[in-house]
Image (cartoon, rainbow, N blue to C red; front, top):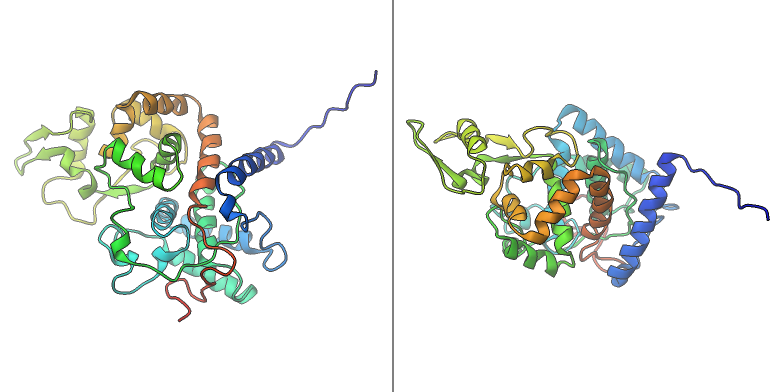
Amino acid sequence: MEKNPTVCYPTAHLQKLLTFVIFISVFSSSFPCSSSLSLDFYAASCPSVELVVKNTVRRASDSDPSIPGKLLRLLFHDCFVEGCDASVLLQGNGTERSDPANVSLGGFPVIDSAKRVLEIFCPQTVSCADILALAARDAVQITGGPEILIPMGRRDGRVSAASNVRPNIIDTSFSLDEMSKIFSSKGLSLDDLVTLSGAHTIGSAHCSAFMDRFKADPKGSFTLIDKSLDKDYANQLTKQCPAGVSSSTTIKNDPQTPLQFDNNYFKVLLAHRGLFQSDSVLVQNERTAKRVAALANDQNRFFDGWAESFVKLSSIGVKTGDDGEIRQTCSATNG
């Protein structure tokens, strides 16, 4: 009997194929109402969209290494409020962007830059929501993370209200139950919560986001308030964030490989050196602690999980078809 021939795929092709399989299985089962999104949405109308966004993100990141972390955080803050509709990009009094929880967001010029180029080549075609999703995707890849295929076809929202921010955004002091409740309301599981927390492997945070975990007086006397935090690490943080520190001072989320998207974040958690209280709680629950350990021990497992969870994240509450609009500029509705 003749044997079936063996088909060998290049590694890059195989990774894309596996990601596509993940997308089909997760997206079709979890987001039936988002069937208007597709991998080839701009194939005819704007085939250069992914190249334009990726080049824009790469150039910006080359000149400012903090950009990838900012773009990734920007997507989270957009998708958790009103869905992934670029509502966080809108400027004005009373918008999401004006809420104190969002004043430290960054990366807006990168999205605006990509939009300006796309308006030249593909006018009134590519949504700001799709640009933001692609930019966050590319931010992960250019810092060493997995290459992910994500569907497109999101439309931009017209509503952006500061009052919608606080009930939907995760605070760094949240308990696991508080985080789980919000993630569940967005269609994300507890495993998604742990996996997506891996976004903290890049980026940085202002001292005010974690200084309540310890206390240091002007004379240098140190008191550990949150006992789940490694004492030596907390002592280091007091030196980087002393009493009266400038509000603009930031600390890298991952103290070891802050510019590399890898699974080191989970190793940091196991060493009780998670920067935020919301990080530390992940190793205080049996189920999430097992997930943390598994991702810390296997980077490929983290990358596979990230690809699946990221597709779900970037598809939360998307607007498609006749809903929303395609903005001409990302900071304002079309009027």
